[in-house]
Image 1 (cartoon, rainbow, N blue to C red):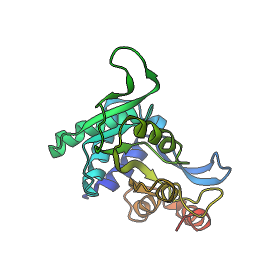
Image 2 (tube, rainbow, N blue to C red; image 1 turned 45 degrees about the horizontal axis):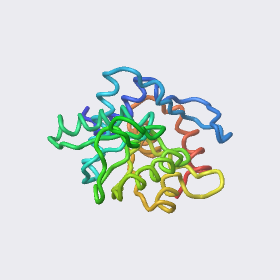
Image 3 (spheres, helix red, strand yellow; image 1 turned 180 degrees about the vertical axis):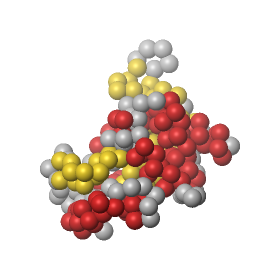
Image 4 (cartoon, rainbow, N blue to C red; image 1 turned 135 degrees about the horizontal axis):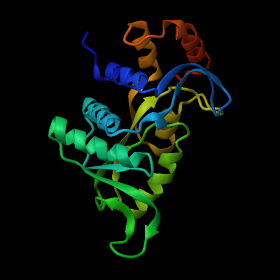
Length: 220
């Protein structure tokens, strides 16, 4: 059976213990029928595959930029892996950089390691997941303090498409509303449900709970 890159990614998450089904209490207090633990990515092989999925998402959405920005810390290896995959699989050469937690006041100095950002430079922010928009809220002032860059988008692995605690909007929609930035994901909660329905992954016994959770907390 031939799978799309989205379906392959969902299978990849399950195989590596990143996507699990059951009953999980989230930080929000909600009881969710699925859980995503990106901390289970820990090998070079996993990281290489992750870069391929991010690169596919960038190309699928026709995002054009010069530099990938990986917010410290989780975004650092993701931006590097994505830059490698873009060159290896699509012959697209992109710069990458990541922020320091504190400005370096000696040597080459500056806030960013890697590409030294310039006014007008188009960048894509690379992150693992988006829960509250905290990473975006922290990296944007650093970018703007360094150069007047144009953020053409942010790419994450999974969009839960779930309402925030105090809003009917999802974290992705909130990012668009607050910062004017489009967030693209390799897959969404709907893609995961579809993968179960189509037999791409096991888990039909969890479908009822997935539907119920989406109906209760899914964002429009």
